[in-house]
Length: 335
Image (cartoon, rainbow, N blue to C red; front, side, top):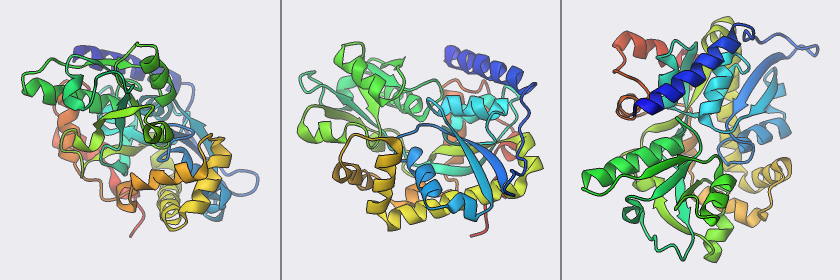
């Protein structure tokens, strides 16, 4: 796993260099709102783009006194880089081990809330591939988005499970987002690619793709915060109230989404320019419940810490003082 740690260290080092000339900050805008720069890990996925689009459409940020500038990254590891460099104040939907890896490289980063609890990903293959379930993936190539992403953790965890059963390890390949994985599967670059609602729900329903691995069956992640919300340490210290306000709005937005699924889907489809019909997008709610998208409690911290070491994101376990410094939930709004 040395390659994983080395790759993450190089990315973090580059981000820290950028941080020297890009200090974080949230100043009051001309209209009196507090500026907050947020990195979201995908513009279209249910857990990333949807809450941002809804919060904007419904005026939740503005009502709370925030002016939010959103940057959409290519995945959780890029979100970490954005926060570390100071180009974003807060980042959502990044894996805990990725944040831990950055922290152990002296990155100015804190984990401030849960983002998605449980491993909500799936891996698909073509129907004529001969692959039917996760056991068939032993020795095969599986795609993930980028080093340190939850899709990466999922592949590593599944490979470890198969190896424990005496089966060959999976060959993990960094491919990018779901559309890139679909292309890679269709061109025989990989055997199985990852997805997350709403991508390919219609193709699976029509039998054009088959699901061969479900994140809910990988490891013991059902009650683990597989993706977290992170903040730049300097910005958090300078703007604690803005951080708490953002988290409160984020949580309230999810509550509104689950109370108004059809309206939320209509906003999502238009803002993200999604191709699937609204009835297909509505099936995303079959994969989630409100509790999975909670910001607190942040459960499964011990599992996250163990994964960081087991999968090479940290060379050694964090001390109790380091854990307390990294996982700082003091910015959470009171419930």
